[in-house]
Length: 223
Picture 1 (cartoon, helix red, strand yellow):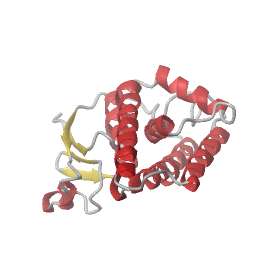
Picture 2 (picture 1 turned 180 degrees about the vertical axis):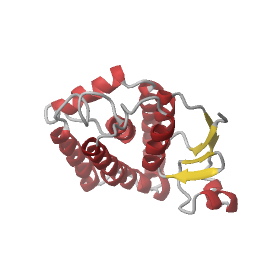
Picture 3 (picture 1 turned 30 degrees about the vertical axis):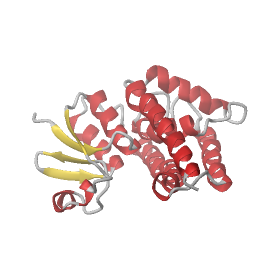
């Protein structure tokens, strides 16, 4: 099988979810880094693949697909040797899908909403309401953790997807162990049991943290 082309950036949680999923199911990726600063995501060529001009985008045998949640379901449905990451049971799928929506609509949305003003608009600090929205998301996750993983006692696509935004959020705005002990235990469980978690999540989260702190310094100097 020819490698699937993945257009992504190393900082985006969504692209990392695709990379982790591909690793877990043994799918080879030909990674093409998209320079957002140079607006490579707005070229005519890219817009033909993905009119939403987001990352990640994949091209598999000439077919372009975008949105990480759609991509990872596609990859496991087509290429995984079993259905452990996305079981065929409809109730389990519905629960996983709910967490995929939670990742995009809550975790990633609040991460992006907090960082975008600092990265792109020169904001010198994080407003308290943005911080509170992140801590509220942690509390929601704490309530969802009724087993070892987000859906049952084994890894699923819900964990892969949520781990990407969650690892970056936790690096920047640490989870309070007193308020969310189950979430802290879950983060430790991911570190031990999610393959490539250090490479794709923890290391890149540290890089994002360093970039975040440097931008805050630069933005405050520019005031």
